Every structure is written in C-alpha cells, then in structure tokens.
Image 1 (spheres, rainbow, N blue to C red):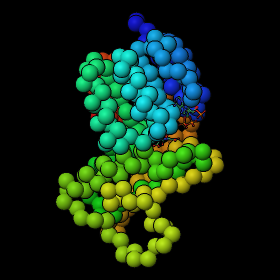
Image 2: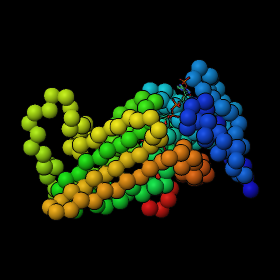
Image 3: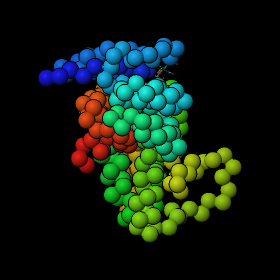
Image 4: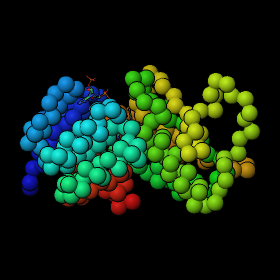
Length: 247
Ligand SMILES: NC(=O)C1=CN([C@@H]2O[C@H](COP(=O)(O)OP(=O)(O)OC[C@H]3O[C@@H](n4cnc5c(N)ncnc54)[C@H](OP(=O)(O)O)[C@@H]3O)[C@@H](O)[C@H]2O)C=CC1
Ligand SMILES: O=C(O)C1=N[C@H](C(=O)O)C[C@H](O)C1
C-alpha cells in the first residue's frame, strides 16, 4: 500500500489539529508537516496532499501556493466565492495534473442533508435555513448554509417556483435574517454547540424539517480522509464532497 504524504495548513486550529490526529491514525497516510499562521509554506514538507482549514482570507493564497508546487489540496475553509473558484481554475491551467477539492462540509450527514434539501425544494412553497454553531465561529452564515441556500434556489428556479411568500414590510433590526439568492438564512451562535443546521420547508397544512448535527469535529474526519485519498487521482477543481461519494 502506498503511503500518502500529507501536510496540514491551520494545524493548530480546531479542525487542523483534529485532521492531524486523523492523518496520524490512518494506516495509509503520513503527516509530514504541521503549518500554521506565520509559517512559510515552502515545499509543504514534501507533501503530496495539503489539507487547508484556515481562514477565508488566507485559504485562496495557500491553495495557489500548493498548486504552483504541484501539491494536491483538500480545502475545508469557508468563503469560496465564484470569483475565488475561478482563480483556482485559472491557476490549474498551468498545472493540469493537480487536484483541488473544496467542500463546505465534510460530514457525511451534512452532505446528505444538502442533497435531501435540494430534492425537497421543488415541492414546498416556503423554505428557510437555520444554522447553529459554536460562538468562536468568525463567519456567518456558515459555508454550509450558503451552499444549501444556493442549491435550494437553483432547484426552485428549475421547478418554476417564484419567491418564497413573506408579507414582511417592517424589519428595522433584520429579524427576518439574511437572504441568499432569495432564501432566508438565520445564524445562531451558542456555547455548547459545534455545527448544526435545519432546513425548514412549508406547504399548506404541513411542514418538513431536515436537520443535521455535528456534535464533535471527528464527524468531519471520514470525509476529509476520503478527500485526501481521492484528490490524488482527480485532477482539476471539484466543489463538494458529494462528487467523491457517487451521490
Ligand atoms: N468544510 C468543513 O467540513 C468544515 C469547515 N470548517 C471551516 O474551517 C475553517 C477553520 O475552522 P476552525 O478550525 O474552527 O478555525 P480555527 O480558528 O480554530 O483554526 C484556524 C487556524 O488557521 C490558522 N491560520 C490563520 N491564517 C493562517 C495562514 N495564513 N496560514 C496558516 N494558518 C493560518 C489559525 O492560526 P491563528 O489562530 O494563530 O491565526 C488557526 O490555527 C473555517 O473556515 C470553518 O468554517 C470548519 C469545520 C468543518
Ligand atoms: O466553523 C465551523 O465550525 C464550521 N464551518 C463550516 C461551515 O461554515 O459551513 C462547516 C461546519 O458547519 C462547521
């Protein structure tokens, strides 16, 4: 069995440290570098695959560096706009052998939640998203919620559904939440939580709630390791772990 040499960027963080433990516990991987803020990325310790869990403003530069060194990258950091993804595609033109996986959520249940929400979207007039996270999270709404909203909005558009009904005329304090492509999205920050999301659908006389809970960051590790194993043989940019799971 070939061993995959892995570098972790953001290694001292909540996710990065958990990824280091998971890589060290995997028989087919070797952790060759722990990189954090202020460290020189250099040759990434000779890694074949880098895993990035840092901050939205640092991650694109880290990914560009890895591509320029011919190192595959698995990215969990949030903040990936279309413009930033397009820049990755441009960088990959010069290194077509390199694989990059960007996934808003590596928990298998969260991937399924997004897929189930996409499936349900065309059947319901009303839909709102509530994401709930630990209070040290710096971005809102979560990358998962934003991605779910975009998936639902696309499914509604395909089904010819109009805007979600809402008579609100007066909301000076933003009580109705953010709108992402027309989908109301609410963010809760609370001590004791890790990462949770509900997608609420409503129609005349009924509702459907799809909920996922990550109680521990180990929930993300099977997905991250699947990403590390898969990215070496999937050149180009892939967005979403579902593409590695035959979903
Ligand atoms: N896709 C997924 O499944 C998941 C994604 N996430 C996302 O992952 C990201 C990280 O989350 P989390 O681990 O909780 O955050 P943390 O703040 O705990 O960790 C981020 C780490 O990155 C470091 N860092 C910051 N800038 C750089 C840089 N330029 N180069 C190297 N390291 C850097 C930080 O160092 P310092 O603190 O010293 O600045 C810190 O150690 C977030 O965007 C979060 O939303 C989280 C969970 C799951
Ligand atoms: O910051 C977190 O914790 C998480 N971030 C990701 C997101 O923003 O969607 C994934 C998960 O929700 C945990």
